[in-house]
Image 1 (spheres, rainbow, N blue to C red):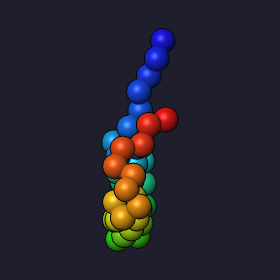
Image 2: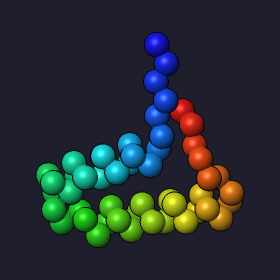
Image 3: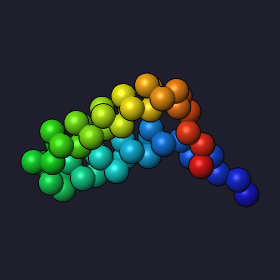
Length: 50
């Protein structure tokens, strides 16, 4: 059995759960997500596979 996971949907799921539990984390989670996506875009990592 082989499962392919993509980092984008996994991060979105975790962020969504955290926002539901702690609504005040919304701006922090969005900021961190945008920073990580921006850094990956600058260094040329377009798709991560685990």
